[in-house]
Length: 144
Image (cartoon, rainbow, N blue to C red; front, side, top):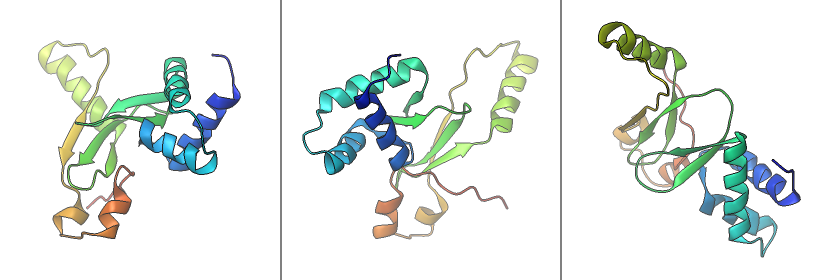
């Protein structure tokens, strides 16, 4: 992939937003800092960065594709009320893959898991600004 100033600016916007962001959110972030930044350039840069493997394009249920910086592969659980996102531990995904291989003679080539549910904050009725602030952000892992 050719390194361009526009791709770097899109990359920087994804980093500032913390990942799990949509093209519209990235475009709005760039408009905030650089009025007039073309939306078409955002889409072209996201395509190039995804194709190169620098970004992961992830579908989190209904709605637009979300982008995050490619690191280790991970799966997601998403709150259907606030849109908060939880990364599913790799060990759980490995257990699922092992179960499929050993119990069903099925060899996973690529595993994509999306669990849709309700996070603890939403289940306890915490609403308002906190929910809006959580939309699309990574939820804290809580183990009991």
